[in-house]
Image (cartoon, rainbow, N blue to C red; front, side, top):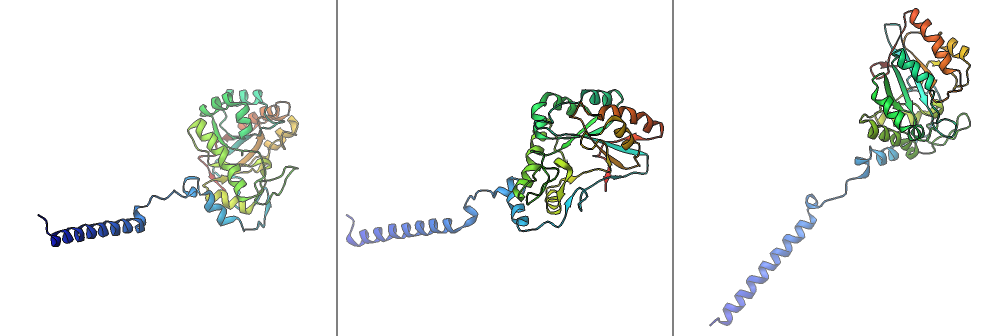
Length: 280
């Protein structure tokens, strides 16, 4: 028979055990190391939220093609030139200058191709073919082909990105697309119109992106005739970066390049891609 005294002792024992369990449970809730928190999005989204917080209240002091931090040429002790070709995309820019591409291939001319997201969407098979060819270095020409600005500044009638968020997306969305299609992440960027503000350039640097413009205006947005393209290229100096277009087959770009390259080669010039160069 269990006595009354034993019964009371048993009840006290279970009360004490229950209190200890409750205390342990309370401690585990207060111990933040045991709590699984969601990973902040900036840690999984290339610092997006962190960058927005860093730059959202900064006011640009420069806007143009030669803003501080924009690379326009490279260091070389040799007679080297970089040929770069933009593929802009959009309603007036989705075409392919097949004659130009064929000439680059036939003459084994290393080139850097800045590809816009819209052009890639319309020419995906060709894009992948070019990306597989070691003759071509694939880089980023933006998602929507906009000037890169934190407050919507425009160039050549095209409105720029209007916030830090849009600056990041203009670069990162197409960068991600190119990486998904090729397995390689582009680290160079040229905006639509080649215009930037200085805050946008700083954002790019924080993202590990180098912004590259030019020293030679090779075809002036594919508006030059063949002779003008040739004349522009023949003014090249060692370390120059030439800006041309590969998406306007009715322009003078292909013929001008065809006329200029043999002359440049005769004068001792060779052609290089930008990924191995020391940009300045």
